[in-house]
Image (cartoon, rainbow, N blue to C red):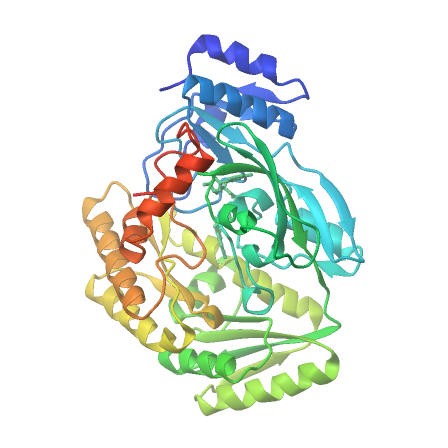
Amino acid sequence: MTFAASALADLESLLVDGGSVVVAESELVRHGEDFSIHPARRPDAVVLPASTREVAAVIALAAREGVPVVPFGAGTSLEGHVIPVAGGISLDLTRLDRILELRPSDLTATVQAGVTRRQLDAAARRHGLQFPVDPGADATLGGMAATNASGTTTVRYGGMRRQVLALEAVLGDAQVVRTGSRAAKSSAGYDITSLLVGSEGTLAVITELTVRLHPVEESGATVRAAFPDIAAACAAAVDVVAGGVLVTRLELLDAWNVAAVNSYSGAALPERPLLLIDITGAPAAVDENLAAVADIVGDHGAADVVLERDDATRRALWRTRHDAAYAVMATAPGKKPRSTDICVPVSELPAAITAAREAVDALGLDAGIGGHVADGNFHVAFMLDPGDEGEVDRARKLDGLLVDDALARGGTCSGEHGIGIGKRAYLAREHPDLIPLYRKLKGVFDPHGILNPGKVLP
Ligand SMILES: Cc1cc2nc3c(=O)[nH]c(=O)nc-3n(C[C@H](O)[C@H](O)[C@H](O)COP(=O)(O)OP(=O)(O)OC[C@H]3O[C@@H](n4cnc5c(N)ncnc54)[C@H](O)[C@@H]3O)c2cc1C
């Protein structure tokens, strides 16, 4: 059911703390599409609440009227997550943008859901601290929690689920709940915090988060190693992880990706499979881990190994890596980016990447492979014309092949992007026995079925 015009006035009357309702065409369009190939669908209204009280009031009204509510952070998710497939309200949380409290002694911060990761990281750095979870986009912390996002530093610090200690959230019946605590650990009751992390706006709207912060490391260095082939690069990555070498980042870019980032960022990286390895800590520990890494990459035939200790140069190198997704997009303007997201136990990585390359070649796709290989998470990235049925069909076949391969290796269909619309069938393939339980949970948290319908559950 969509929103009746008369209900818009009711909605506006609920926004007593400065929130607003927007029905401007450009905003409806912006809130009805994403980077994915899933068809766009405009919401009936975009609501920008300015307080938890307003979020709860909007949800109460939506529950009464049976109107869908789709939480919206920065809109950078990649699987149709924010597309309001059944119309209704796009609930844009970006006005909840305050850092409520930063507690250096506890290494925690409490923020509203619309604060972005860079905003929090910048504030933390003023205290010698950092917020390390760094997806390629400057996403909101609410959206990052809702997708259990991760990034280049996950091998060291963990992804969002490890960072979130407590939440304030509004359930689908408008009840405001507080989960977790500010303590570093807790054995008190069911872990609702962890359940809401990764729930993609289908169980609750997150309004506030308490997250961990981490000290900025004393010193660091980055190794850039070029390998004769991708299998050798992967084998080296596995040995670094299995050898217990303390790395802060360990990323793979294949030659296709390196060519894309060179062209986009004006870098001059060797166009061969590359590992970028960041090591941070006390100077003596950094040196020890650097020596271990040098041995391992040498054993796997890395010929072109560059050690960078200058902070500005390291930052530039990691910026280039962070821009890799945008570099891929720049290879075919007008098309849509597509990025697979499987994750396997790290020992399976070389075989999984070899199988992925074979699948890409067999399907005749022009694609690169790269990713957070220390976590066993890699992306096959390419550009796609959603109007070209042949291309879409080949992309779907690739998804299916990679997911089957990952599951056979004990892995998962999504390491970090989440399920959204696009991976619902794969979730059912991965956890067929859990789907009935998921449905029951959905009914408990969202009894009226209004929260982000058409997502996650097949
Ligand atoms: C260039 C690029 C690079 C990327 N790299 C990475 C990467 O390295 N790692 C990674 O994990 N992801 C990556 N992503 C994907 C994306 O950035 C993440 O999924 C991010 O966590 C989404 O956050 P957002 O604020 O944009 O959320 P949105 O896209 O707005 O929303 C995502 C989902 O969360 C829900 N949601 C949003 N806010 C809330 C809330 N407050 N309460 C409840 N539900 C909410 C939405 O309904 C939706 O289902 C990348 C995306 C791009 C475009």
